[in-house]
Image (cartoon, rainbow, N blue to C red; front, side, top):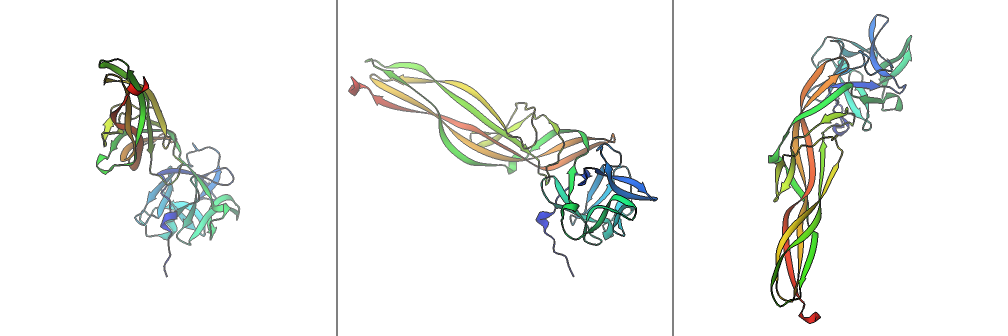
Length: 324
């Protein structure tokens, strides 16, 4: 007998999480009748028993323990206790799978009995975690939050060897003209104005949108220059994950033209607008509510940006003799 797993529905949880039940309370470690139960009974994400630590196995099953304890979750007569010393993936009662419901919500299945976990009030226990539901009902849905006081993102490293440029289009971004009604050639500096537009988005490759607000300052960002991606040295501040920031500036350029006698010269400034995707890794420093500092290297970020490049001046001439 074997179990078919829908791998696409499985979700990667952050290393440190907090679970909120349908009663609006956080799941936390509580001693009840001499046993370490998990109870939806805290209204404070900073409660010492609320932060849970998640450990991923090779088969994408997970083990979970309270951050304040060295004991892992274990199913005992369907109640979930935090009392296991086992650090392997050999005991199914200590193993779980997280299934995505939406961007903030999951369902946890215990692999010991293949039931989903819910809040249960029974046998003298109130709102304690129990694995006794065979399908993803409303009762088994857990909201995931990140118990992080402060998060800093730094030391971003872009992988320029695995980037791409796409959606390229050639545009006329500025135009101006000048006329010479004399019998002699003239030269002048023709001014063309255009609005330079850049869009920039940094995205973390996460299954759930439960990230803490992060302080992110970028010393460099990728930019398309002459059809290649290079790093710009401009410092970027005030960004958040997946927020697209559009930066515009009006730029004036002078183009020297020679006007033949009795001729109108029109100058078009063309540019290519393109979009690039650039993978990156970064360091993440989390300050937890329990005072611990967790520093980790995170893979799988993607920078997406667009800008003008390959600017080119094109001139056309029109005789004015016929208009006189």
